Image 1 (cartoon, helix red, strand yellow):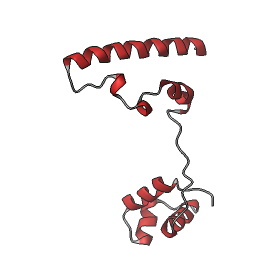
Image 2: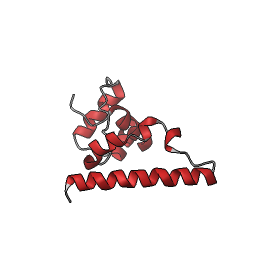
Image 3: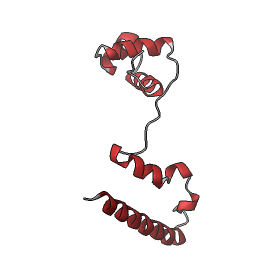
Length: 109
């Protein structure tokens, strides 16, 4: 489909969605209207810009790696799974997952 048609339909859908949310908010006080949402959750420009890529752009972490994070990163770079890393380090797989998401692992050092 041509991009300007896609943009046109997205705008029409957004307006219809806003109108329905206002109707729903009158009936059910638990429904949030667009004006009550935090701006980061209702940023249509960012959605249009990053929609082709699957949503909002992920923020790359520049956080310095701790000792355990360096070890986990090195193991991931060598192709090890979370389960294998957790058994070698004596930690739970959830802990490894938390470190992975906090530091954006695996990453080149």
